[in-house]
Amino acid sequence: MNITVTTWSLEQTSPADLHSAAVPEGDVRIVRSEVPSPEFSRFLYTAVGQDIRWTDRLALGYDQWREQLERPGVETWVAYEKGTPAGYVELEAQEEGSVEIVYFGLIPAFRGRRIGGHLLSYGTARAWDLAERWEGITPTKRVWVHTCSKDGPHAMDNYLRRGFRLFDTKVEEEPDVATPGPWTGAQG
Picture 1 (tube, rainbow, N blue to C red):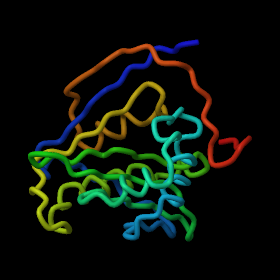
Picture 2 (cartoon, rainbow, N blue to C red):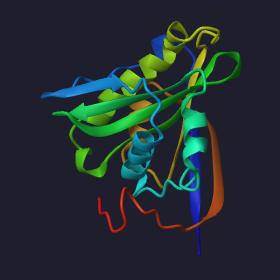
Picture 3 (tube, one colour):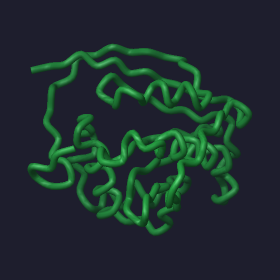
């Protein structure tokens, strides 16, 4: 069985485009995961993507995860609430000064707590200054992301509120695939 999926691509072309969200109250921190860890990254991917059908990385083996994470200009920033991982943003430097927000999202239990806007703001700011942390990476001229109709109901609004502008829309048929979550039978 197939489902119709709309994918929107959005961008910022200047750091001045970023409209930061308020920092949520309470013990919320965002920390860069500086040691590439396929186990941790796969946990974040499955925990965040379980209910929104993230499947593109499920078939990757350990070495493939490691290779992706160890590439120059790839960064994972993790939001924690009271010491517990709440979500993450993965950045990837690309050619000619582009940085893609490859993955962004919250674990279902942490949605609706004002963490997402803060994490997206912080992650986007880190995309803009990414070249400062990597030798040989071209300074950022563009930050871009795609979201789709499978993502959470507030995803597109969050991107627009942070100052991203739509530059492309595609509609495609995709197989309706179940995702396992962080463990078999996990529920959001």
